[in-house]
Length: 310
Image 1 (tube, one colour):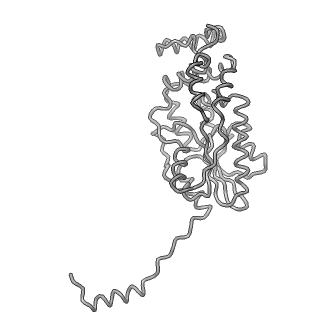
Image 2 (cartoon, rainbow, N blue to C red; image 1 turned 30 degrees about the horizontal axis):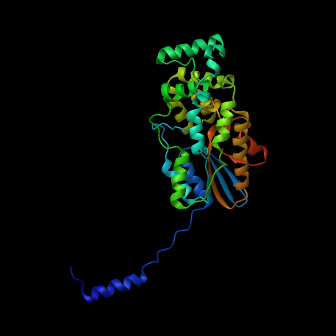
Image 3 (cartoon, rainbow, N blue to C red; image 1 turned 180 degrees about the vertical axis):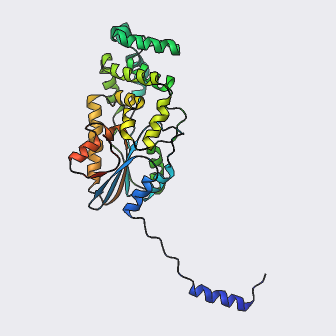
C-alpha cells in the first residue's frame, strides 16, 4: 500500500515522540555471580573490596547425562573481568622423541621384574581377577600404565562425556576478549624426569584406587556427575573414580601436587586485589581436599560462600 503524504507526516511526528532506546547498563558483579551459579556447577564466591572471585569446582569427563547448563557459564565468562584456568604441560618435540625411545622406562616395570615382586598377595589376586575379566596381562606393565588402562579402557570413564568447564570458559573468554591467566606450565622434561625417577612402589596406591574404581563398576561414573550437579562435594570426593584420579600421578606426587596447589592459592590471592569479577575454574579435588585451596584461602582470612566442601 502506498502511503499518502499525510500518513508520512504522522509517522514522522510519532517518531519524534518515540522514547529513546537506552543503552543497557553492564551487569553488576552480583548479576555475573548469579548467572554463573545458574550453570549448575558447584562454585564458591569471595567478595573483595573492589569486586568478587568465583571459584568453579571442575571435574573432568562430565557425563552427558549430567544436567548442567554450560551456556550460563559462557554468559558469565563473557562479562567477567578476567578468568583463570588450568594450563597444559609444555612438551617439546624432544620430549616426545625421548618418550618414544625410552618408552620402556615409563610403561614397564624395571629390570624384567613382575607385578608380584612388588604387590602383596591380596593386591596381586585382585589384579589377576581383573586380568581374567578383561583378558589383559598387567604382569610387566608399570603400575601407572596399568592404572590408566583400568580407568580409561576397562571402566571407560571418559566415554560419552560433555565439555569440561575449562573448555567452556576458555572458548567463551577467547570470543569475548576476556584476559586469561594460567598457572605456570610445567615443562615436559621435568615431568618426564619426575616420572622416570619414581620407584614402582610409589604408584601402587594409584593401582589400588584404579582397581577399586573398576571393581565398583560404571554406575560410579553417573553417580559422580549427579553428586557434582547436586553440589554434594563430599560425595564427589568420596567417589571411587574421583579418588583414583586424585591418587594417581601427578596429583599424588608430593612435590608436584604441592606446587600445583600453591600456584592456585597464590593466583586467587593475587586476584583479590583486582577490580571486577575474576572467574577461576579449579579442579574440584584441588579446591576441596584437606588442606586444599579452599582450606588455605580460609586460613588466610577469606570469607568463602558456597557449598560445604568438607
